[in-house]
Image: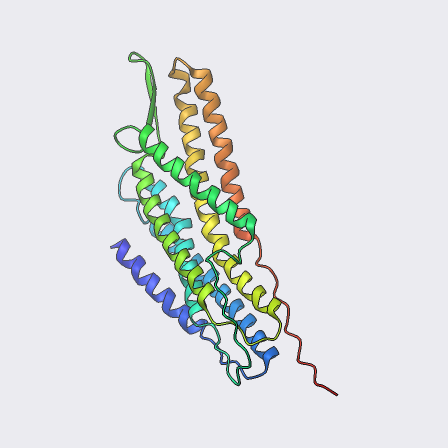
Length: 293
């Protein structure tokens, strides 16, 4: 029932975004076309933030995924994922409704664009690091966890301790599925940005800035969410190792590993929040054409 309700919310969110971010038709003036594009991007970004927050709030308040012992951890993972999925879907819809230029088209350039050609290099590198971290955490947690998929044990046959939560399959499966959906939506949104028609402007720098800002808005959340999810899982994994360290033969080593893991997880979580808050590059206004005297 919760999944059905979430589906209804997502459908309503996308429908509302379509009404909120409907493109205004650009008049023939080049500088006015750029202003309309900037306004459209602002409206779409605001709608994505609002509706993404609504989806995250819905998941948290309904405790989606909390249907068994330990399920509250699943809900905690789904909150940022729901935000990222809805945020990216709304941005993609905003790009699909990008203002179409009107009036006489004086020139057109054929440019082959890749999905991340306009992205900041540091953001692409952090995205690759986040993806690798997610893979390591989900695979490693799945291999090290107990059969219940949410706990870890250590110690001898006589004295053995178990601690939970731990990022096994119980937590890793919903997180992995959600992040795969986010990844697919991100790729689709980036393709839409790369494929959309150029804004009618004589200044190529303005056109590049508009596209660069759009790519940044899509990528920052798509990079931040995996960092937050992987960081949270690493943090609780470290705490679990710390809990069972006292009963282990190598208690000192396991305790140090647990501490280091928690620190790395906390750092990744904070980094994800920081990346999500970095504003998109500014877009200058198009200068009006100079008439010959």
